[in-house]
Image (cartoon, rainbow, N blue to C red):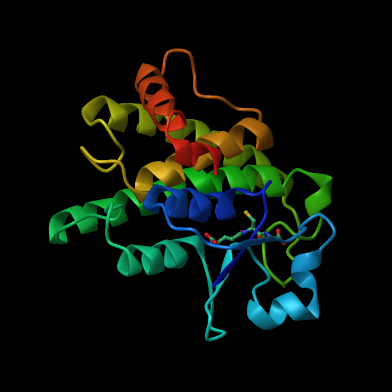
Length: 210
Ligand SMILES: N[C@@H](CCC(=O)N[C@@H](CS)C(=O)NCC(=O)O)C(=O)O
């Protein structure tokens, strides 16, 4: 098994945090996104979408999409459960994780990739050229601010994003908040005390270093 990753990119960090929480040792290989190593023929044979993370199994099967990689490890090693333990909690983790991904993670990506010159004609990840749209940079930043408001409200209702237990939804939200600090230069507001409480707790987990 081999995980293709990139230290500076947020999506692979989701997979690395998940794996660290599980306490599984997975060999990893760094892909240099800056130099375009993910567009090489060799890497695109593994993942035609040219994105990291990508997990290569021993039989040669390649799994991309961080959620799919997490689903694989959850099934391989159910404890500690990070995607729920029964029908209700599984559905709630899935619901919150998707909300965080759509409203938070994708908003930051939209704000970042439509603004930075390094992503000219690569406003979306993947093999197809996609032009930047200036207005989407502002929209992404605004959507992320709205997300922070919603996240703070949610974390005022429960200890973790999907309820009483730490889950994949917390990993996605934590990675999103860290991503936004560098990419959009936006941090949670000083008045968002629920995020501050939750962020300190997640930061103190060893997996936050993954
Ligand atoms: N939905 C995918 C997103 C993967 C993705 O966008 N990865 C980025 C790094 S965070 C990437 O590979 N970008 C390559 C590029 O920008 O060309 C997932 O969750 O794995």
